[in-house]
Image (cartoon, rainbow, N blue to C red; front, side):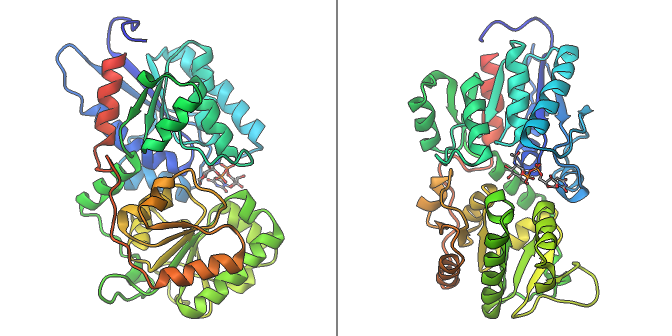
Length: 390
Ligand code: UD1
């Protein structure tokens, strides 16, 4: 790849689609924009596939993270895996043929990630994959398929933890293409903390703080394996109601989860709370259903909670940095470093077991942990490598 670039500015197309992509891309775009090197100019373009499109899932993150408006929006929207992937593949190919970039940069493991990487590779355009090498070793997860395939075709693989590099090498990827750079999600977290942006979520919900942590739990669930089965989701809602006897439970729900709660007739068991509105407040014995939280509110909610229950990948990492006990409602994690850090436990998906872990976690307050290179500078390292290798 080195030395094959044509003359002129280096054109990099970064791709986002789903909510977590935005958190990861924000610092990379900033680092690309900040490059000042003699005889090198970078043309940075952002393409939004539109996999996520609600304000709470997309536009609100553009605002909170000051992400520039995309140069191009593909408006793919929802659909089956095949529909979403195929529509992105085809629409993104058209963009690539027009733009002729030197590099396509993809992040994470969502359908947009794989589709964009595949479209570029088929046109002979090098791909950089940020957050490469994470493996749950559970092929039933769509993300695991997306990760493995994206890594197999990427030319530059940027990893967040040492084990990810080991996974890639075991799969036959050459060491010289693997770069351990740290975690861009942490870059966004630190940037937000430094920016002085302050959330008023707890005040709006009337949740008081005593000496550090406030007395509430946060839960996020959106994996099909947890929310698409009536039996599993009912068991989890029952479990959360029991946990709420100990402390109020905030449940900012992904649109998919919200739809399933309604479909399975579980909505009536939850208090629907609108942050800032008069009326219902989080209380013992009831679970508070909220809209998906804006990024700044979400970080505050995670930072000050006594425990977080989640099936998200990114939240396992954010709670590690924030020193909040995290109970992962899954059988596996692709982010083992969060367990080694002592902040995260992988509890499985049986509601009784999850409740036991959550109650155990209430007695703990782990120290915030910064795994190697989770220092807020990952994006700069990525951009240095890109410049060097193109
Ligand atoms: C996707 C990712 C998942 C990631 C998650 C973060 C894949 C395979 N999965 O899952 O890895 O953890 O994003 O949120 O790419 N919907 C809306 N509004 C939106 C977006 C989605 O209502 O803005 C609803 C639609 O009913 C849609 C459903 O949510 O069908 C699922 O969305 P989709 O993008 O297919 O997957 P996620 O579950 O969000």
